Image 1 (spheres, one colour):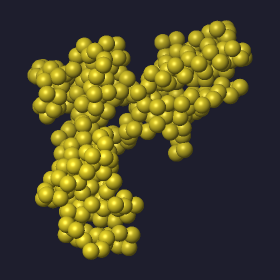
Image 2 (cartoon, rainbow, N blue to C red):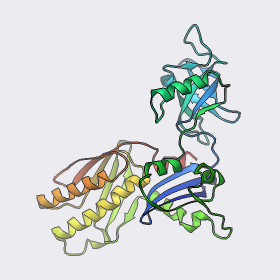
Image 3 (tube, helix red, strand yellow):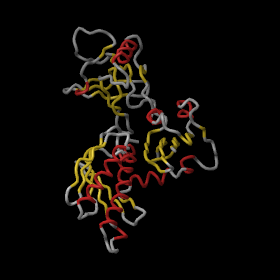
Length: 326
């Protein structure tokens, strides 16, 4: 049974929304977003070009009275102008249709793109373009599904035991699908220990019930995960025990990949096992875990030393980057 919690929560002295998906009361996905943001990744606007940055040709574009974005030179292909131009030279005062590629942070503007990708087909994109030709600058032509809606859409066939929020905007956006939490004594994020969940999801060391632990560290090129026997290292080791601990670690590792939104190349150093059948059993087990991830995961190979290579497709920013962006 699944639960979806959308709770107001202070993070880094910022009013944030924590969105947590639980399966059998275990957190499997966690997102941290700024509360009250007017724009989100995937939204499409009629923007007003305020300034061109020489010599590369990037541009600052006003999206609304309080929101501006930066259009890099590499994102300027196939510009859709509101008013037809004799040339393709963008100038201050032009009104163009842009998509939010990366949301703004406290220090940086949103990153824009002239490529108008949406979850729909080409006809929908054409409709958005046509609509944009008749709307003033600052108009939102397309509002991408918010995180909570995307999770529910993705799990439409699943049964939820509870969907709850204490944020009025989220409650309205969910259109009656969620219960509204308004207890003044205990806040929703404290009720579900979201601060603890977040701290553990950012920690490098994750303890397992067996006494072993998993150590997760991000390098510039890839993510390294080490399975350490920890508190069981002093016991007489056996192939059966090592396989059992490695499977327990694999369960936690694949949960952490999803919880932390880890993507790219991932190297996992499992406890070494001598028997080929044990290694093959672990490899097959990890393939099964990969298939359960809603994001595409490929378990590539495992070496004789027990190093497993995994790749995971990137769909959202890592959890640590979401915190840094507040």
